[in-house]
Length: 386
Image 1 (cartoon, rainbow, N blue to C red):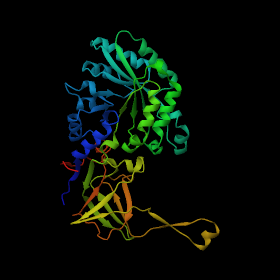
Image 2 (tube, helix red, strand yellow):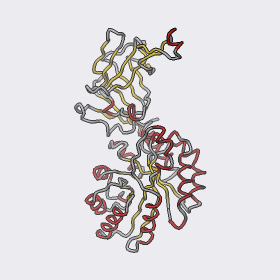
Image 3 (cartoon, one colour):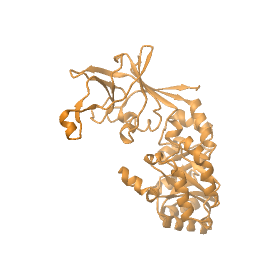
Image 4 (cartoon, helix red, strand yellow):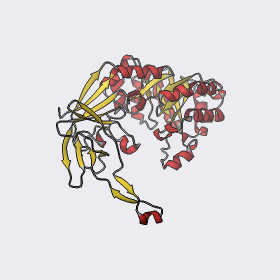
């Protein structure tokens, strides 16, 4: 087996995912999710929009024909970056303060741009405060209060030099996607605090939503929004656009059997090379051992087992003891955090001539292929069928 890490990109599945999201609203793919040229070029061909956080990412997707299909969404833009973006006719921005709005209007006038689209970003932290506190998630404070947004919307309505259309943007962190009715909760909050006089033309859902969530709640969501005269939504489907599109074939660098029954396999890709979600969001990837013509799914386990003893029964507790004979997968760095997982020992013991398949690796894989411990070799394979 080749010692090169390979990432397979299923472009047909990518096209299918794009068309599914497009059925619910205008799609702006977040470039930070995956900046791979193969992925971006397929989405360009599909006439997707793109959401960017930086001028560097803007340059990756900007062409002579699609400047109107880019949202510059980072609310912490420098004046130099605003100048550059407007000089290249990018006219869609996300803001959460008046100073940034003033700079955008100034440079739009400088470059004789007659119309703009502005997202005013709502901080939804207060809506989900109990859930965030319960889960111990810090508030990013990106986005502003209802009061600030109403002032921004008023200023946009009264701007006479440039035609500006406006919508409300919000970002729901990944941990809140388990809240099934989260979109309806936010929509009800917007309906409670805004009215038709605010002239909100759309909502922009950041953080991404699953297709099944949109299918389940779209009709109810639009009924709520229609009460404010809102007839469209904008979607930024990041991880859920590419997650099922990309898989990795990763060779082992070495396989070591320890005296205590452990087998430690060091892979050519780890936490710092696309698998950071294992740590950030306790993400469980499906991982298979490819040994010859066999494909063996690894079963993840805790690295300890609980054993009931007489003394522990009386104390209503359990004693922790190490679990023998386990397979430990780790990444190629010397960092102690670079542990992918602990698994039951498979019937076929891995060798350095085998490989591991890590399924659904899509989101953020490009951004995490770092040089933390030296660059790793990646070969991209394009698949054109389902």
